[in-house]
Length: 378
Ligand SMILES: Cc1cc2nc3c(=O)[nH]c(=O)nc-3n(C[C@H](O)[C@H](O)[C@H](O)COP(=O)(O)OP(=O)(O)OC[C@H]3O[C@@H](n4cnc5c(N)ncnc54)[C@H](O)[C@@H]3O)c2cc1C
Image (cartoon, rainbow, N blue to C red; front, side, top):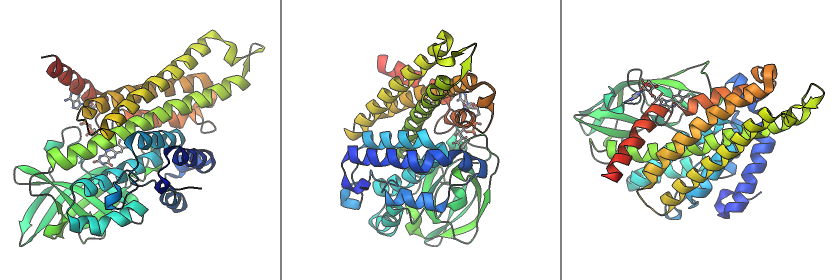
């Protein structure tokens, strides 16, 4: 099997499809039930070079293009949204270090982030601030040459297995980003069980109590992270969630085509009923439309075109709402079986709802896209 380092996008994608079909899909219900991803699976992701393949070659990455990255995240999302979420947040941290980190930060963190030996998590949300990140209350105060951080982060994907935290904290009027090893004294990680969806993504809350870090932990100058590290990382995360949502639609379609071809009612197969066919047609159309929107956003990223920000909002809005619609239809088509853990429909239904909340909720996309439309037309 080749690795992402081979840089042949089609070969990488073929490997990822085989990995997802053989090692993810058959175990996705178990990952969901046990609320864990086995270490061996995370190691396989590292062997395939999938943790941060988009980092440029000059800083040790594989230089994989964003369109291919999106297709990889679609494939992984087709198999297991919990695993795709892990790729998303780790990618956001790796991207931040690669794009904005100092030479020292890159030297220290990039190699283990690329291999997956160090797992990075993105710590922005708090119990009282989500969509409105400016309301975050975590505070970093200058202490000699370093900083002391106090705060409470919540809903942190991969937090249970985190090695490196990218923590956003207030430093005076502005927001700063810090690279905090999870073993630093004062970091307390508590698992959050029983989430609605992406249950295998090992979510945690993280309390920081008098956490002391050196000046070298801060990315960029004080108060500078909101429009740079945060915006850029969230854009990449949103792109990943959009692509992962396409994977959910595709998984719904695959499951429904298989099920309706087997299941009989009134002496005929489900697949021969027009009302079922309408739902199948909707899934096919949604998957194709959402995939094209993601590809468009990916191409703009590869071209370095800032229009990718709007394109990614649109792709995420369309793909995540398409995923909830497709998953709802998938449960309906499977009847009682769709309500049981014996078929993937129930998991896809729960996972799809998460896609409408994370990386900018549906309502935030709706207001942001309209705002941008008025700006473009004016
Ligand atoms: C499974 C999961 C994984 C997550 N992983 C991470 C992670 O790794 N790191 C991290 O930092 N965070 C993570 N989060 C948190 C996630 O980013 C937030 O849940 C998200 O930003 C929404 O914030 P909130 O939940 O506080 O909802 P709120 O911001 O309180 O919003 C509540 C509701 O109000 C709506 N709303 C809010 N503002 C507006 C507005 N201006 N106009 C109209 N409607 C509005 C929202 O759409 C939503 O429906 C995760 C969440 C989940 C569920």
